[in-house]
Amino acid sequence: TSLLTVVSRLRNVTSEPTVGTEPSTCSFASGTVILTPSPTSTILALSNMAPGDSTTGALVLTNSGSLGLRYAMTTSATNVDTKGLAGQLTLVVKTIGGGCATFDGTQLYSGSLAAGAIGNPQTGDQGSDRALAAGANETLCFRVTLPLGTGDAFQGAATVATFTFDSEQTKNN
Image (cartoon, rainbow, N blue to C red; front, side, top):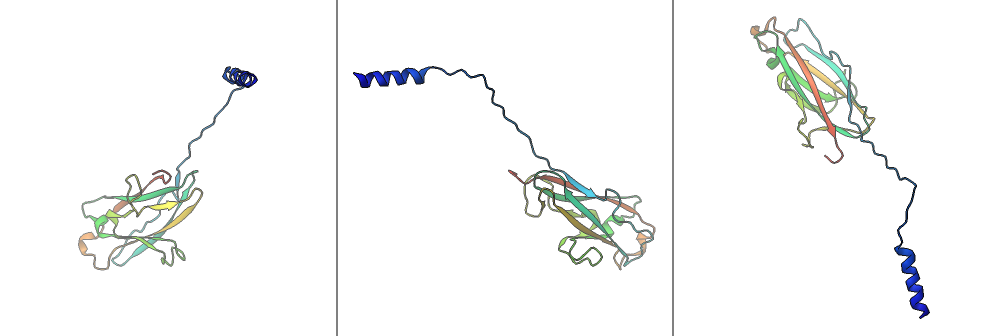
């Protein structure tokens, strides 16, 4: 009988509800994805271009956020006249390599300025997007050339190109 009494007492002790007055707190904070370009103004400009001329500029992209990110670049070009210079100019984008002046980095894009792109701005990794860890940066070198064989129809032509960078988190995406 004493064994049954012990079991019964244990049941009575463990089956009573416990009331506490100490609060439990939880804290949550989301991460950030912030892609910061520098400079934020014009990176390439050349007036009075002649066939065969080119200009090179650098753009530093910094992940100022707390999460790793991947980015893609697209280009929109506006011809300020009807001559179509954006489609005639060639664009090459490379990583910095030994420097933008030497233009010897890894090629990321080569083709028409009007269609300039790196990666794909759609959500998810398409394999050609560029990745940047939190706090990291990358310098891209841009070169625009008016091809040597450009004809007289492009004399006095002008265009403005805008490079747009879309970024997203790499974690769980």
